[in-house]
Length: 105
Image 1 (cartoon, helix red, strand yellow):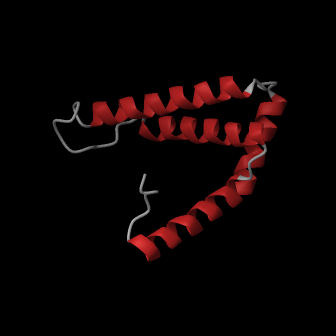
Image 2 (cartoon, rainbow, N blue to C red):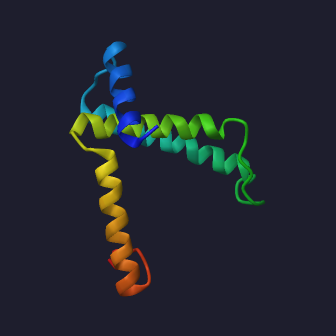
C-alpha cells in the first residue's frame, strides 16, 4: 500500500464512522498517542535500566500514532507522500553540505 493509499484509507474510515473533529483535537490526539508510544519505550527499557525490547503493545501503539498522524495530514490538506519526499530531499542536502540532518539551530 502506498502512502497515498494509506492516507485515503484513513480518510474514508473517518468519513464512514463520522469521526471528523477540529484540527486542535486531532493534534492533541496525536500528542496523546505519541505519549502512549513513549510509555511503551519506558516499559520496554524498565525505565532506562535495560536496552529497549518492544512489548506486546508496541505495534498497536505505533499504528495509533500513524493513524493519528494521517488524520492530522488529512485535516490540513497535506499530501503525506509529497511531504515525506520533500523532507528526505532536505535531509539529503543537509547531509551533503554539513554531514548531519539537523537544522543547526
